[in-house]
Image (cartoon, rainbow over all chains, first blue to last red; front, side):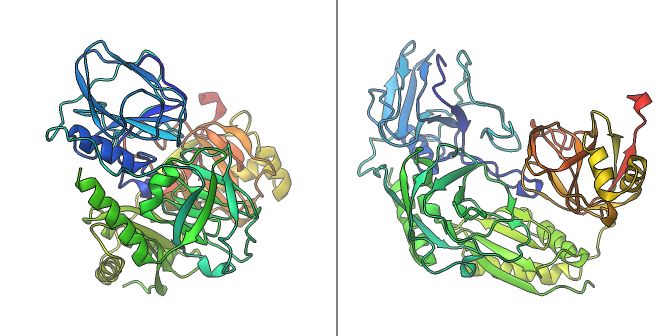
Length: 288
Length: 222
């Protein structure tokens, strides 16, 4: 690794089974892009890869490699969503994003780092699984490819700002007015992998006694100031703020591509619609 | 058999259900939370369990499990668990250096409660605490059992840096900071025991249901 960019970490699909110790799953902020990249280079979809944020890094390959860049366009000069052969000694140089917040560099064989509690994912806030990468670090490539690299992906999903994020009702939905979700919001600079803080019309915060309860990925919390926080991949495992809605699983990838100052609005859907959207994504991935 | 608080099951997201045992903190609700969390460990398609005072959030893989299927599974496991013999809890002793640089808020707690600092330490270390659950952020234990006389409001502005191992009071709750982090609780002492190691070994010190005692360590032995 010649230079790390703004924040580059090793990620797989997350560290599950530790929430009862207060450890959230972490994992790729855009799991769809990570899975697609891994499938394209012939890895298992959960292989460890590099997640770059807003400004990408530069990497020199010591041996021949097959890689795929997925997610947002970080100006690397290579086709996105496609396996690419690199020769030993070649440098892959990414720059500032030209679209969304995150770009994934998947390498055939996976990034071979020791697993911590069953996962290669870095939980940046707590240091579980390691830390953001620094210039000069050497990352070994593994030997865990499971099939031949695929052809370039077709009809790949668009990543753009002004996103509509689909939601289903959460556990305190009936505490809020029916039109709580109609405001337009802007992603705040204070957002990170723990939470996406939104700025916009305050959602009237209901009073009432709320006992701390478990919170899932994508929960929309409304603190007393009415400015919603979407709990993200490194979220706390329990929380005491009321939650009117929850982002659907199929839109986690959109959350992962939101940049500071992007606009967001919420669109309520039914549970059936949420699960149908997820199935469509799965079908696209398995056509790769 | 446990007399169980009423169970309610609600959809929390397209991949999770919230199982609640009443809306209050009680040892009965805690027992249910603990049993359900234990019974659902390692079940195929269930990804994570988030216990709290009186509820468990069950996070599952929506490609493998449907909501009604998980609900049926939860009810079946609760029925099974209601016949289980409760296991005797472990007691974990946590040595603490109270006051001074380790517990900068001890004088404030004494002032607020109208007790001497010695009496605060005596009462804090004489009580037995229950780990209601471990949550929020990495390995933070939510302890019940703080003597009500010791309840002290949180700081009006949280500290930016609370040292790892700080033993603290936040309102009517007692806790120990597992990692250095920002925090608004009143710091009365510090332990050298590590609740959590970011490398994942050894396993976290405190588990849901454990009993905890704080043992004062004299400054001379520091």
